[in-house]
Length: 66
Image (cartoon, rainbow, N blue to C red; front, side, top):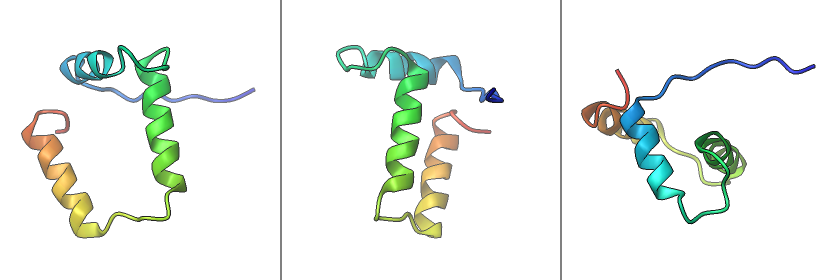
């Protein structure tokens, strides 16, 4: 049996993702997020620490992260 955890996302972000994947073959935001994370983890191109900080700051500025 697998154990699960919960990740909280702002409702506005989830609505944006739902609109984005409307015509895509994903059944839910959860499936899409899992796909993107796995794809990134398997990618040969890494994100530098500076890029990660820039991305985090942009997400904070947009209100997706605290």
